[in-house]
Length: 110
Length: 115
Image 1 (cartoon, rainbow over the protein chains, first blue to last red):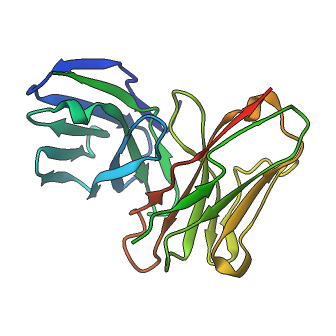
Image 2 (cartoon, one colour):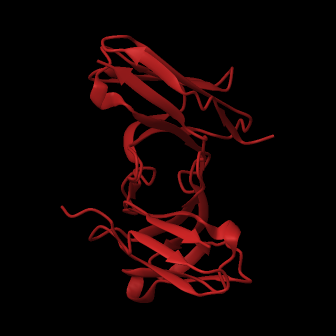
């Protein structure tokens, strides 16, 4: 079993839709949770990070962590064509070694 | 602030040939990571440096891969000899110790194709 599971998609939504991206994990020691955005032929770019449980909001993006269910989510409100990318979740127990999901490919259609 | 710089951006080599990748981290970042990202997969850590010390190289295939980080700044990752299965994107990332270490900044990667 992989440390982190992520639905690869692809996910296609109309502009303005709310997007929900999810990851599950098996290691209960994980306490650092991150979401990265990766455009084609670019390196991953950190979008959001959360320590332990709870929610975090930044503009149109909201990250949620449910440690009891070992489940994290990223919500994108009012999605834009520029949000079209691959979204990677990543997790760590110690803030040094990170385990990445496989990424979900998102396309926002104008 | 300049980002993480990697070169070359693309490399095509024949199997059994050697290849090297270079990374220049963000100025002041003492932690440097090398990841490998296969198509349709997330990055997988190969090696992590704190300054010039390799503190985690457990996932580095040491029979053919080597890395160095002289003077705790630039780093080079080498493969010798390359195999077909080494075709991937090699990503370098850096972060600053003392700051939230999970704020890793990635370079654009080197796309390696082994034929």
